[in-house]
Image (tube, rainbow, N blue to C red; front, top):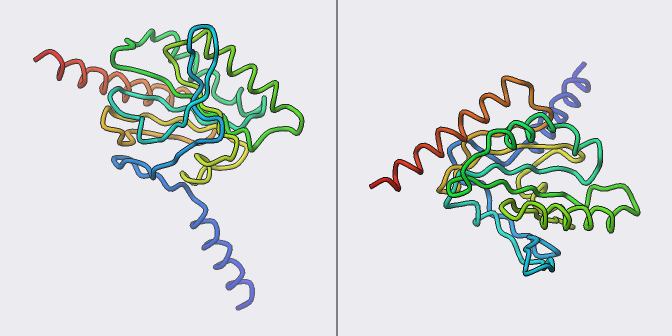
Length: 191
């Protein structure tokens, strides 16, 4: 009986230490992505720039973090569609999609990179980050092979997040946080 209790205690401890490193109301731990990183459109060419989570300031931001797998990409399509249909003002809002390329099916790296480059060219107001080393997942303590969505305020503090599939109530909560932050930012610029 004592052995079972010890094993369960150790398992509980391991589970609690592998949980997310994020707290609502706080700026998340700094993470830098320098191997590939932010895709930037320069004329008709895509260039890669270093990216840091400290760049998540100045606007209401949604960060979509996904494993580079089709199954992870499809998890939150309803949430992505809600964001697209909301037609949020780019003056106060931006999305950043971070693709964890360290969590991909073998042999798909070039396909993933090409797809992201196409999306960067098609959606110049959105940001796409190719994270070849999985630094964001590791630094923020996210689950491997999954999808997560985060909402940040203009100061870079976390307003809301959820790992895994968002249901309709989650999507409504996400949109409310975004709209409240956009209203706050636009009221601050009205002065």
